[in-house]
Image (cartoon, rainbow, N blue to C red; front, side, top):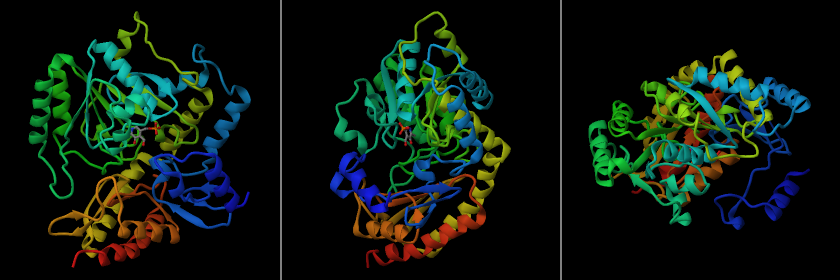
Length: 436
Ligand SMILES: Cc1ncc(COP(=O)(O)O)c(C=O)c1O
């Protein structure tokens, strides 16, 4: 199919997400390998966002492709009331790598469904209904997960699911900066007291916030939330859909602070998106709760053999290639490169990264830290920067006044520098757009 046909038919007969359809202008993609993908016309893009922060092992790894093909030939599907080898092996493998005593998993089709089922598990386990989630968050686009979501994607869906209360997190935007861990914890505790701790089933959070800013919490914050939850019998749910599987340089972001959540949701890097799969992992006390009680939840594609086989092969790639340690190592190079951008470009207001999870916040004015585009919107300068990246063959997410640097964990230092060289040139656009 030609590039033009691909785009025209996709636009004519399929609905693009989060968009007014007349505004979408998709890049046609024919194939991908490693950190690159190509259009049907042969234009090459360096994938600096691992697609949607999910192709962590890189594109087209033959070990995963073969595992999928072999599983498809042997047993493509078995319903979730049965037992299969890939399901059995994946549950056991995840129990090895998940923190603490998280050793039981419920498999879903993706991240949003993992969070939906975490809501169910938390409410059933505690017998409470209220859930706290943070404003600077994204938890998925299904009914419950979008109600949990704090960012503007929630607005059109309101009033959404009842019983969800949003709270502030330690970051208040580029103009106002960060709370200390103590201050953020005392504000959270105040909300818990005002809502009635005995009514709260769970606190959901992204341990390192993803699309809302690669927000790395101050040390002490996550252990403090853990202690607060323990004091009140509230479950801590870590949404590691984006931050899991090596993105931050550890298997899971909570591992940086030694915190064991009660429920841990995952997707994306679990299969590196070769096949859709999500999961919610639970601590033993929660799994035991359902030993003699019914878990009221189910999905036709729960524990899909093809997806479980893809996940097992993906986990083997992380281990065989040492990709988790590699992300930590290459992440240090990326942090230096981000620091270099901040030093050279006045429009760079802030850079943050942990492992290969990075973001640049752009400002119109470094004194006032006025963002280059408003929350939920864009600006001429941000659109021009996005166009420049596209023309130059750098694929990444440009969102509001930010853009991301989230390459596959397999990226080499040379490929990383290739991407940053394009970014370096592109930032002259936003430098020029600064307030006089
Ligand atoms: C932190 C987080 N949670 C949940 C989701 C939703 O996952 P999915 O799109 O697979 O439903 C995402 C997706 O970007 C995410 O980043």
